[in-house]
Image 1 (cartoon, rainbow, N blue to C red):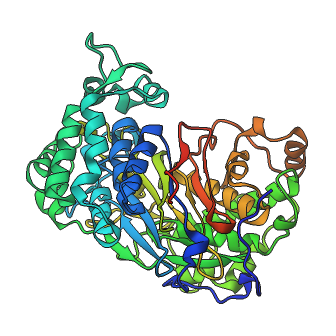
Image 2 (image 1 turned 135 degrees about the vertical axis):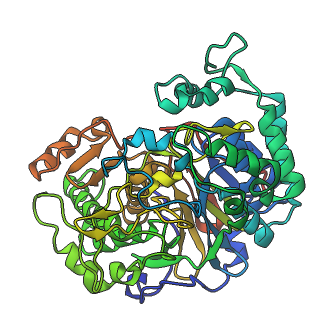
Length: 571
């Protein structure tokens, strides 16, 4: 095994929690210099990023190219019509910056807009397919802001791979074909059937040629007019028209689109063992991931390993505690107070960890950080998302999770790409148990997200790893599993990603039961944890670790179609 770089000196776990800044001493260029590389969910997107890196582009430059190609070959997961969270590590300064490209609700959105005439939440599928489900898309505006700060190449040049592929055509990937031919309502809708049709009208199959000239035309506009071209002009008018169509039209206006601004924020960073783990602040659920790692620090999970059922039991119980708090408290801090400091307070974390017993009991209730009371949450999170990482020759890194929410978003398309259904990431019910729900709908508000792209540093502020996953609410479990395996059990990154997934939330213990050894399943059952298949299997983890001497160890999740490739070595 090849553990990540371990710094000398006192354990980082003795450090005071860092809630802002994540500013460290500049990285040693000799230690971090590498050729660069990309891990993403489709080989064509990986190659697009590498093309930019070979031309001398930065990690953020490459991220723009990767996203533009993912929108073509993986439109069920992300695209121009969605949102994202982006973490950037700047090797020159040692600083981590968080970019929030989460969608916003139109000004006309109301807390009761997903309620039926009886005052109860409308069926989730009806909400998803409605025009009300679409928030103002933020991914491209966010990338534009990041590229203006960290880019090296002209913005216009970054879309060349995506335009070329959309015009010349690609072979339909197996995963895309699987969803095109699925029974998901979005796939059966008129927009998807028209976009993914063979000449005879039948649905595209894996290996069929697929051209998307309308998508190429949109990329050309973005390339020539800049990232805000999506939020104005003809494109914005098309978005407003499509979201305003029946059934259940939304309220989005041209003013909503024009008003959108990505947020540039200090990340949340906290110690885990001898490392610093950095995530975006709320409405990302990264704070919950940090809390779960902190809870596990109060157990002996690090002294165990992936073959020990007690290790997985501790993981499951910490996960349930984390989700209980996340579901109650995390929301858009511009609209409701989020008790970030309280959720990570050492005394509070210690008290939560003390609830882990010898057997799994009933689902744990949310804790009560001082001064906070919120109603129970009624948010549902499908898993139409993607994650990718990029490292460039200078050692700068990007970790980005990007989404249109459900598969093919709302099922409504504009100019060859799909609109998100991100507003169904709000609680469909605004009040529970007589108390307001933190993640209720409000005009201008950003819905809570499970997306939590990760940057890991060592004590000297050097990059150790960048990773993340899609998967709806399961993202937090996928990321936590990989971080524990990588940083506590010292597994190589690929082995950490390959470990079985276990998602423990509320009363449910779901995941890849068939991948666990029989003795592990038996040990878990003896502790009251019965892992049931059917949910929590399909992570899409991608990541990179910087080893001694700057050697990059990238990995892609075998559960999807991604891969890791390095750029041509720097000479």
